[in-house]
Image (cartoon, rainbow, N blue to C red; front, side):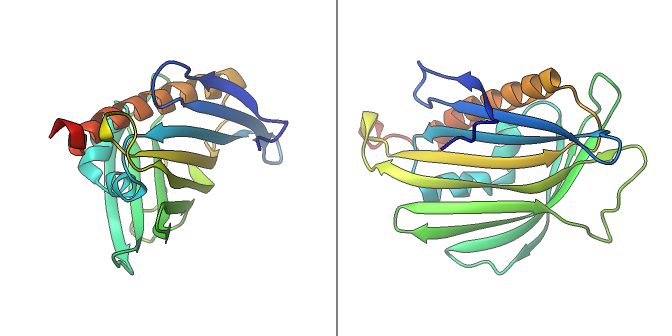
Length: 211
């Protein structure tokens, strides 16, 4: 169920991933000087939930799938890792945009197996003594975020499994961003990421029918 105050900003009807994106933006702070964006999205991937989570935890693959503004993705700390779950502290930095602003993120991400056919992750911004906020970079805040990944077909088209991904995200840019700019940013970032991800996943996990 999509809340009534979310606006649909994208829907893919032709490609197999069937991406849908919904967005809600608001101005917060005492003087309404910062933009908080809430994003809901859903799409399909041609792999199992376990394979998708493995892809999400692979730094090299995330850099290949990410947009050109991503400069660094660094796992600062890995904790409580087992075959079914892991906690990872990430530092991510973006290059300066056209307005001369650089952004960075510091967040803890927990991914875990839910049941035989499902995985999930969640993430939230944190503080760390070795990664302090610097004056020449906006430290954005993930207020909350996460994915659920559920297998919907163990052997679909081309013999590939198909999983359904749902994402929720609340992001505080720590600066004012017009609603139309936020819409353009999330649409471009998510569409680009999903399409590159699907391409990489097909390469990493070939169809059984093509082996």
